[in-house]
Amino acid sequence: MSITAVYPGTFDPITNGHFDLIERAAHFYDRLIIAVADNRNKNTLFTLEKRVELARLVTQGIPNVEVIGFSGLLVDFVQSVKGNVLLRGLRAVSDFEYEFQLASMNRKLAPEIETMFMTPAEQYAFISSSLVREISALGGDVTEFVHPQVAQALQQAQNL
Image 1 (cartoon, rainbow, N blue to C red):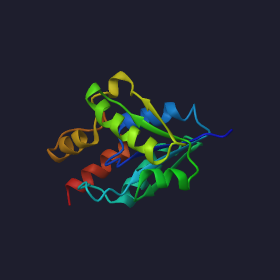
Image 2 (spheres, helix red, strand yellow):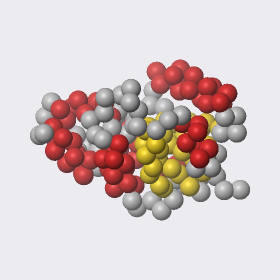
Image 3 (cartoon, one colour):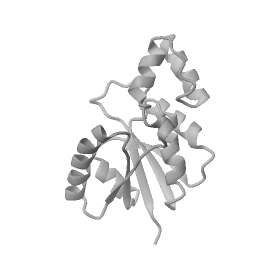
Image 4 (cartoon, helix red, strand yellow):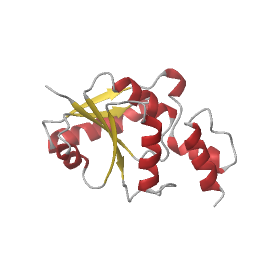
């Protein structure tokens, strides 16, 4: 049986913490889809197209990883790509309650899709896209937290 996992998020921007999960998860699944959400409720720095482009750039060396932008209900997207697993990252205990609620709702909507949780490596547990955006907006150095081309894109976005 071939297993397709979907790792959803806004990835605004994709961080080294995201990459850590992607790189490790790619070993467990035949196909790993990074599902970049067009979430209209979030005020993103980058367009959906730019976020997809950056995620593709960061993950280009991992052969079984695809990056696809999507909008709408996540379980509908997972079903459309014939996904079996939803992959979610947990950085801290504070993430668990919200993620548990999402997993329960997704199970109710699509019981055939299983949710799996992964934690990032310890050195990435504190990194979030919103913190990276804030540090960059205030002129801080984010090169330790993101791929060099993501850091460059952040710098360019701040200069607009």
